[in-house]
Every structure is written in C-alpha cells, then in structure tokens.
Image 1 (spheres, rainbow, N blue to C red):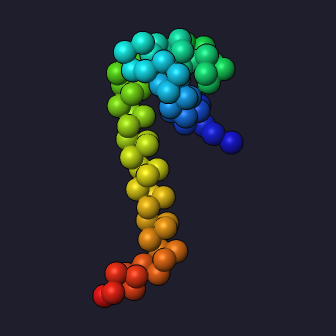
Image 2: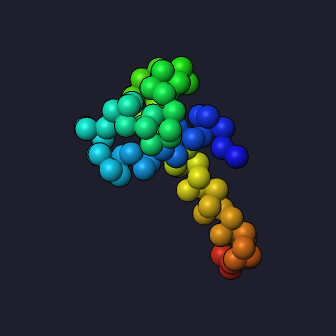
Image 3: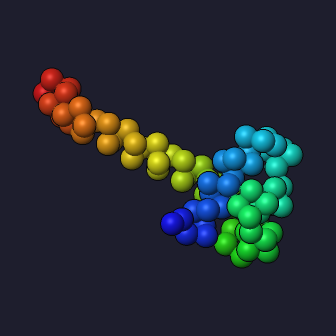
Length: 81
C-alpha cells in the first residue's frame, strides 16, 4: 500500500497528463488522489514543491528500473568487461 506522499506523487503524474503543468492545481492532484487539498499542502506546501518531489520520484524510479534491467541482463558482464 502506498504512503500518503507516494499516493500524491502518483496522482501528480495522472493529473499532469490530464491538465498539463500550467493548468494543474493542487485541487486536481488532491482529487486524483481522492484526498483533500489541505492534506496535499500538509505534505508539500505548494504545487511547485510537490512537482519538484515528483521529478525526483520519477527520476529515482526510472533509475531503479534501469538498474534492475541492467542486472537482469548480467550486470557488468553484459558490457563485455
């Protein structure tokens, strides 16, 4: 089960796809997460801070996914080293 902050980060992705950054509101993210705007503000303070955390979250997930694939392919051995 996702933590509250993780739930908001995942909801940010869905709301961002639906609205785009310029039109995205904290209310959109809260609605997507099925939580209140005040709870979003409690964890992140602002749309900008939430978006920054979202970028870090997505980057980390992408990196971890890439590393998992790398090791599934044999790690360093797949590089010919």
